[in-house]
Image 1 (cartoon, one colour):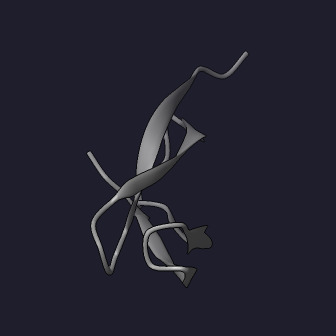
Image 2 (cartoon, one colour; image 1 turned 180 degrees about the vertical axis):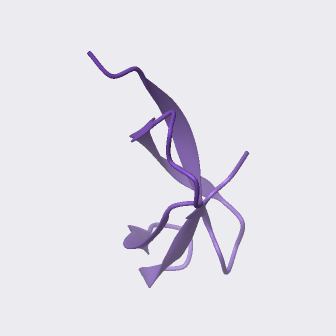
Length: 50
């Protein structure tokens, strides 16, 4: 069974942390997804923060 950890996703425009997602411990790259930001009111790029 693979272990996973929860990491926050941060909006690239306003910097607000809106989402938490589970990622594998063996993932080498930081996750980037397009998600809706309530603060900005539009779909923006959200990056995995540390």
